[in-house]
Image 1: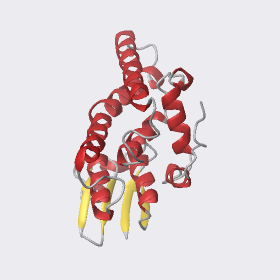
Image 2: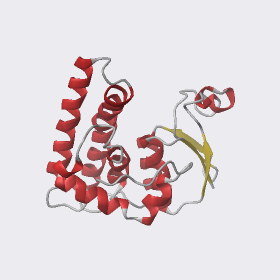
Image 3: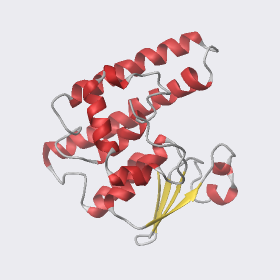
Image 4: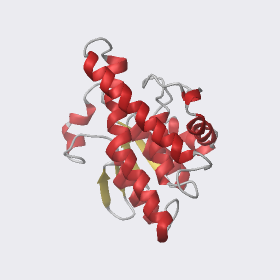
Length: 209
């Protein structure tokens, strides 16, 4: 059994979707970051960084934070959704790192300036809107002629998809990125993605372009 401490953010959704895809038994625990739950002493005892998500794997005794690290751990634990060797393994990790290092942080800033604080910092809005479009263009180019980011569905897709599901907050029209749109809808139709999207609770149906 795995305990998942999470909230309804793209980083949280990565792991709940992955747990559904891996078919692992887990218990979700709500950490409402809008109420400061991440700073409770009992939670800080699990993750001193005060971030979500975190898993506690009672089979191995491992407690792990950082969504990318969790995805790698789950893939290695199960032997699924990450090739064991060769170029496909390295490219899967490459696109996972692309999400962790660029796509996620930039889109997170886009949420902050374009949606939650619109009109307060025009320079930042312009900067992050342009960089967000650049990253969507990169993703669109990668997905041209592909069903998934690498050869098969992988943890890289699980990492990127929840961020794209917030396209409305990025002020992005997915119809302008047809290969991203096709990939996004392909994954959105997966039952595991639908179930993971509703953890720790359903806030809305999966957005449609």
